Amino acid sequence: MRWSAAFALALAVTVGVQTQTPLPKPKAIEAGRRGWAAIRDGQNEEAAKAFADALFHDARDPQLHLGAGLAAYLLGNASNAQEHLEAALTLDPALTQASLLLGTILYRNSDFAGALRVYEAALASAPKDATLAERVRQLRAEADVQRDFYQAQGGHFTVLFEGPADDALSQRALDVLEDAYVRVGTALNRFPDGPVTVVLYTEQQFSDITRSPSWAAAQYNGRIRIPVRGALRKPEELERVLFHEFTHVLVSSIAPRGVPTWLNEGLAVVFEPKGRAWSRQALDAKAARIPLSKLSDGFKGLSDDDAGTAYAESADAVAQMIDLAGEWAVVALLQDVARGRPFAEAFGDRMLVPWDEFSGAAKR
Ligand SMILES: [Zn+2]
Image (cartoon, rainbow, N blue to C red):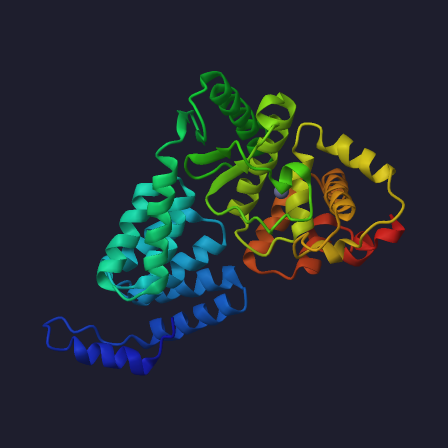
């Protein structure tokens, strides 16, 4: 991703035999450098501005489209990111980073075949790229496994599940998801860019169901995967877990990374149909609390008991935030995180309470 004047010059020289020699454009190069520096610093909004500036001076540079696409993606603007990445690949089909990011975005939008096409085309240009080869292998393997899955199509969701066709069950899952779509989407004023694929694995347990510490920073990576052993027979449990996971989908579309675990999990629990009541009950039964600041980076390593407390505390904190400033302010905070603002500073601005004060669990 490094871009330098020397490289620009080398590129200009190598393509110099053509009649239309692209001359290096110093303003574009300078703005592009600022863009990459801002990406490295997590200043995603600054990066987006710098790349827009750079593209104004040179719209034919694939690296600049890649930068603009990455910044848009990090800001949660997937459709804009997709446009830039497609432009980058039109200009340079061998730009592997653009293919990797575009494939990720398509996959997240449930465009499974589209993602595979992007990776395969990129692999043709760069046959030795191990990451691309691995993505192609994974996608083909996943397609193989899911060939035997039963599939049900709803307005905004595709539900796949292991085992024999069960129309009643799949209809129930779709109904719950459409309900979550309207309720959580409206509360957060955010809807997925495309259809969301939900894969229900009927034979496995899942830590988000059991709220166990094995919660493996299960970053939403494009499809909701829910091992639901047992939960399928309990309508309430299915509803809870689908609302929970759908909330993660929306959080990740607002801020693809950098969201503290407690905020992400807290939102997911709060939007479960009885999440607030559950968290209050769970906390009433606890003497000790874990400082929120220790729950920013995954719940791994916690005992079963502490993991339960962590989910409950997270939900309690988010419920307080919503009561303090409203859902809109919480969304604005997520957007700040996506832009790369320091969390404590953004929190203070959005919640009108200093982060240190709010996070001092003992004072609550
Ligand atoms: Zn969760």
